[in-house]
Image 1: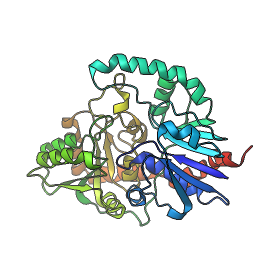
Image 2 (image 1 turned 90 degrees about the horizontal axis):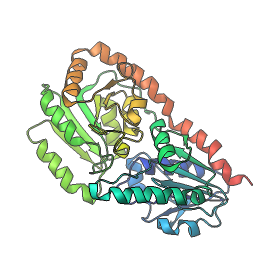
Image 3 (image 1 turned 90 degrees about the vertical axis):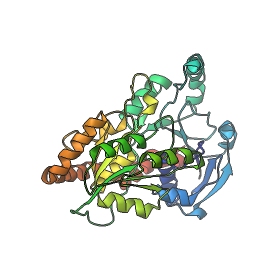
Image 4 (image 1 turned 60 degrees about the vertical axis):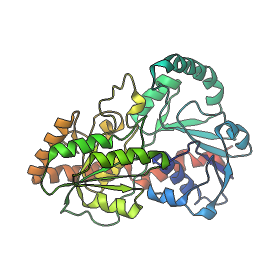
Length: 366
């Protein structure tokens, strides 16, 4: 059987790549599977490994594919699995599944509002024909599911991203470190590292450090430089494109995890600027770093305020809650234990089992 995995996006590797190519790795274990990666850029196994994906390069071939070429490229496939953030390109495969990250419809500038309205209309018009070529749709969270239904008019099944459990026992003793993880970029659902630096300056906690980690492409260089300027004089360390082993060590040794995606964003106006799921939050929880997140988008579903972490809405609130946790080691330890237990719901083994049952099984069906 022949299975294709389509990623239309270019730029830094992120959570979508991890989701799609974990499926690819699972498909590589199928007997007689002939796998092809369809994408505009060649596969980058080294970048995949930085986000936790390791696939044998001999298990697949690559076919350069632009989104407009997908229909023709998909002919002859028994199964196509594609990643998208809009109405997907029609598939000509025997069976097809689309992973919709989030339906990006809104436009950033006021002068694009009329264009956005026109695109929404066009999307609805072409959606029936394109969507009819897919057996089903997947999304990361209930937040994404609701907006997919509202903007694209289709129902998607929720399959949260996979998270690998720690290989070593969790450390009870934690460094006096706050960790923030997220791809360095501007626009859309940016991770607001600038807000974290502002909060850390206000925190002024003796002996504590803030570590910021994430992937980045060449376009992010000016933004990273700006962040470094903001952090001048503070105990802030940057880990840009850090190896996976380094990131896992940061998770395992940090006491707290800060996440600011969605800060001061109104969901009714710009839901695409919110975190679609929040895989790094789950990773932090699974490794024992207590999460402090903006209660919007995916993180609002992941973190139960006061039970598995804390919610914050303003910089002052983030600072105040952090000080409370620093001053209450016993209460923080209880949050840590509950967070670890909750994160196990997203174990990669469960993700792979679901993929085998609900997605890859289509390749062998009539």
